[in-house]
Image (cartoon, rainbow, N blue to C red; front, side):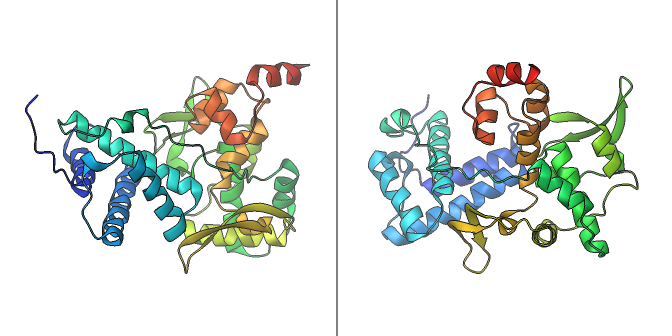
Length: 307
């Protein structure tokens, strides 16, 4: 391997990944490229904070600890978001090493700590039933309700949910399905249309709307339906652009984002685990169980459900 200069700026390493994705064979999703772009801005802000440039070869465990403190204490980012940025930083350094640049050996032994606490926010079957029957008398809210119910039936991320329309419908081996390609993973999936989903789509698909508008209307629907018990969660403040952890009325925490977890939790033990994972896009049983907040093995749960 040809020796390369070792004064490789971290911001250049990030830009290198973005450029490689756009022009090379290893493509990243638009969201992932945007994530690296925002991470580059965070690093540029940290360089201003430190009053010096950051080089790949100088990133060691001490740097990671100080950077983590900066993200949480100075920038007020959530613990979970900070951990993701530390993981991104390690990925960027390992990518630089593959291209011939030296990195600190401490990075290879570093294992990110798990997020301190995961807030499992979802809609129960009883809450979904209340949402289905509650009289709204507003066409915009009716449309938002259909998106919410549709999302909880197909278990997709909001970015994939809002792309679905009539063209997504097809038939495979005599079974009606919704077909889509997940933006984050690139996986092509087929979701069987169960009777409950068919009922929602009786008079067609809901009309398209921006995600932020849908989220506002979903909160309003849940509030009208009395989904107001106090629970722990994280609320995003659009003015400060920060997440605040605390205890809030549940309707304030409900967005289209809960559809995927609602589907996974309400169908766990009722649907074959392999099929459930194919639909949600979780690659392993362990990841699925962590996502829905369960510690027991799926085999034990499904065996008991059969009895």
